[in-house]
Image (tube, rainbow, N blue to C red; front, top):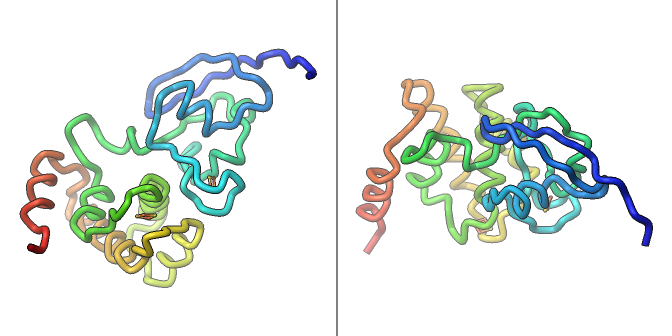
Length: 180
Ligand code: FES
Ligand code: FES
C-alpha cells in the first residue's frame, strides 16, 4: 500500500483551535468524531445522501463524510457541541424538544445544524423554504412535520431575543409534557 505524508492542518472547532497532522485521505467526519471526540457528528450513508454528518464549515452546512480534512485547513467548524455554552441549549435545540422532534435522535445533529444555518440566513423562513432547506436530511423516524414546527418555534424564540435556555429546566419541561 502506498504511503502518504501526513498533512498539517489547523481547525477551529467550536471556537477552540486544534493543530493536527492527518493523512490526505482522512475525512472530516473521522477527524471530528474519532480524532477529536465530537461524537454528535454521526455517519449514516457515508456518501452525501442522508445529511446525518452535516457540520457547519465557516457557517455553511457541509457533508463531513464527503469532505477531506486537509481541504478545510484554517476553517471554523461548528458541531452540535458548540451550539450553546455548557448547561444551556440553543433556541433550535429547545424548539426541537418542545415540538418532540427528537425520536431516535440519530438524524438530530444534522437537522439542528441545518436549522441554525437557515435561521442565521433567514430569520423568518416560509414553510416552503424550510422544507427545501431540510430536504438534505433524511429522518428514518419520519419527524418531518415536527421539524417544520421546530424551525418556526426557534425563529419565534430568536425573534424574542431568547437564544439560550437552561438545559436542566428544558429537561424538566420535556418530562412534564410527556403524554401519559
Ligand atoms: S453520512 Fe454524510 S450524508 Fe450520509
Ligand atoms: S429521529 Fe430517528 S432518524 Fe430522525
